[in-house]
Image (cartoon, rainbow, N blue to C red):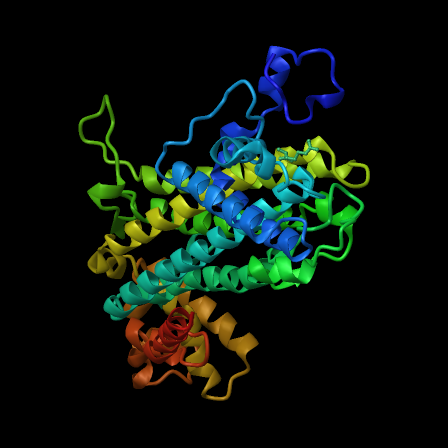
Length: 461
Ligand code: ARG
């Protein structure tokens, strides 16, 4: 039977399926670099305590660097009979490289419970920094597209019914605005991920007096976890990442949904580039926006991971329990999914064909009924009344089967004597859009201000 790390007190061998059921190397090998990083810091901590001589420390550090290099180059040979997880695999290999006499000292006072918590946080810290960069890339693409499509007007919708004209760029920046919020929230998550659990032992603390502040500093963490029982059991950072990612995915999904709708023949506002579409095996004419449908679909996957892992956590007794291993796969998968979705959506947006003429053709004069009401407001009529009057105008146009812009001044005067010849100016989509020039409006200047804000955000890093 293979010798397992913890085998000393065992007489019987582990069941084959149980070994496979229990092992986590299949997935936690993704943490290989972080595991080596954590071990090097820990070895330095032991050296400070004179539990490792300088020579032993040097051998351990260069051995660990060799281990990391083997992973990097795909040369690490996994022992499928004994490598239970990334920690045991790395320790086993280190022993082979530098001899188990010295390698065997590395785990002094250390537990895999603190190792996995440390590794996951180190890994997540790196990955979240990458996601933040990807999000900035998406925002930059939104800003670039908004700038180049500034003159394009389209119907704005509520209840999916045509409501008021807006700039296409304003619609796009509306989606960007949600992502800006996600980026802000990410900063808070990153701060809490950056808390060091190393040096707490299996559950009760370190008996040799290891300098935990030093370990945290060595690993670039911004704080030190303050309770050993909590430190090994704390996967709140995983929950936070999953929940943060869920909301981000909801935002990407809503953007995708709009684009899927806008790319139908019925709308025809946009076309997703070939690079992000796929065809049908049966219907030769088809081109489907699969990229966007997958993003919409994967939102459900990430939300499921969030609620799934929260359920795992719910009834765990104090400190480490093996259930916690179930936090690793959702974390890895969620980060990979979000990263892919961000890259894909940036590609879709950057290569999107925008059909300004189709959007313009979808604008109808009734979408200016509010502007007609506003016209009378400026003549001193209370808005409640002007709303009624404009409603009567819409009704009249319907009766005559014309648009409200085609009614004669006489028709209008019949409904309210306050209408004058200058009312024709109201029936102008560009004017309607430009009137909305306060912060957050759809006028050119308001949209430019939004673009500037994004560029400032993306520029700072
Ligand atoms: N693979 C384990 C995990 O992911 C590492 C910690 C194992 N600790 C233990 N006492 N069995 O949680």
